[in-house]
Image (tube, rainbow, N blue to C red; front, side, top):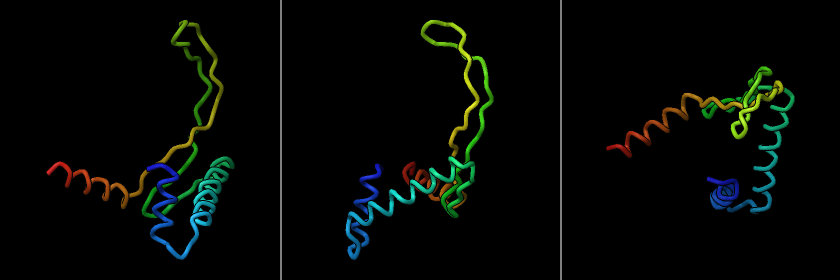
Length: 99
């Protein structure tokens, strides 16, 4: 599902809201999650999962095209861990599809 599909589904499920308002709400939520992660905070959405930032140490990498050694700087990488309820719903859906 893309962000525009999410906005369309939320707007259809909430006919009392304008599509432009739903778009602002979705963009604000995503912006706040990104801002919190940029500040190093953990964002937890109960039943869905948690967003955190994992730090990767500096290392020596290799350019795959030329094979030369390249120094890779330390960096933060966004990481998502699914919550228990989300994992259960996904597994129920895959079990039904396998039957």
